[in-house]
Image (cartoon, rainbow, N blue to C red; front, side, top):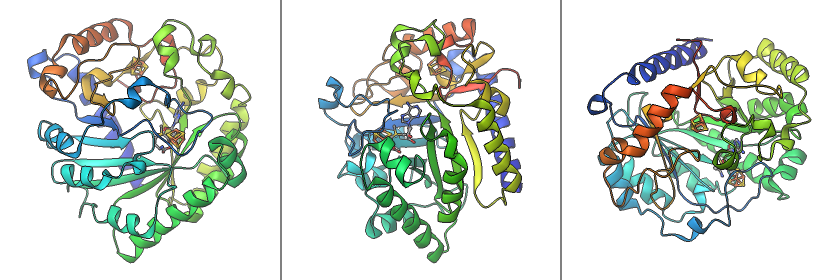
Length: 365
Ligand SMILES: C[S@@+](CC[C@H](N)C(=O)[O-])C[C@H]1O[C@@H](n2cnc3c(N)ncnc32)[C@H](O)[C@@H]1O
Ligand code: SF4
Ligand code: SF4
C-alpha cells in the first residue's frame, strides 16, 4: 500500500512538472528527462500485436555503438532516466558494453521478452543495480509475458517461448533474493488484446507466483495509423484494431477489481498509459472514445531514439535529427520539437493518440 501511495505521488509530481514545462521559454526548457532507445529491430519472436517493423529499411542501417551511447548520456541531465528496448535488446552481443558505457551517468531500465535470460546474464544484469533509489544504474527490468503458457505461445507465435520467459523471470528473482538486493525492480508486462483479456487474473496470479514486483497491463496501439490517420478515431483508423475488438470492458473491469481486492501488495497491479485515471484507461475500450481532454507529454520530457540514432518524436511528426550528427540540445531546441510543442499545445491530442503510453490526463491539473 505504501509503495502504491509513493508511486502515485511521484506520478502526480511528474505530471505537474511536465505541465509547468509547457510554459517555459525554449532556452529554459530542461533537456529530456526520459530517453527511450530502441537497440535494434530484430527479434526471435513475432508477437501478433507488435508494432516493430522487422522488414523496415531502417533495420539495415548501422547500429549506434556503446561509445556513441556514452556520448549521448554525457549530454543528458544527471536526473535523466533511460530505457533500452527494441526489438529484442538481448539479441545484441554488445548489450553489456552499452550498459557499461551508461551505468555511471544515468538510471536506466530495460525491457526484454526474457527468452535469453541465463544464469550468467541474470548475474551480470543484477551487477548493474544501484545501491539505493538515488543511485545510478539498472533500476528496473521489464519482462514481457502475454498470458499463461498456451496464450503466450499463441501470441508470440513461438512454441516454448513461455517456458523460457518463465524460467528466466524466476531465475532473476531467485538470484536477486540470494544477493539480498532490492534492485532492479522486476515487472512483468502484458499488452492487452482480445486473446489474453479474459485471462488477466490468471496471468497476474502467475506473475505473483514468480515473485515479480509489478504486473503491468498496457493498452494496444498501432503506431502505423499515426502516419496516415491522425485525425481519425483510432478504432476507425487503418491500424490493426480488430485485435482488441473482442475485449469486453465490463468483464475486464470485474477481473481488475477482483485482483485489486485480493492484492496483498506483493505484486502491484499497474496500467499503461499510467498518466490517466482507471476510468479513462477502461474507457479506451469504447469504440467512440476520443482522448481530446488528454495531453501528450513527449516534447516536454522525452526522446525516442531509433537503433541508428534518429530521434523519432512520434510517428505523427517527422524525425527531429540524428544523434550522430547533432547534439541532444540542438535536436531538443530544433524546429521539429518546437513545431510539435506548438501543435500539441493547440490540439491537446489527436483522436488517433488513444492508447499511446505517452498520454497524460488533463483533468488532473
Ligand atoms: C516492443 S517490445 C520490445 C522489448 C521486448 N522485445 C519485449 O517484448 O519486451 C516492448 C513492449 O512493447 C509491448 N508491445 C508490443 N506491441 C505493442 C503494441 N502494439 N501496443 C502496445 N504495446 C506493445 C510488448 O508487449 C513489450 O512489453
Ligand atoms: S518479443 Fe517484443 S519485439 Fe519481439 S515480437 Fe514480441 S513485442 Fe515485438
Ligand atoms: S500522445 Fe503524443 S506521442 Fe503519443 S501518439 Fe499522440 S502525439 Fe504521438
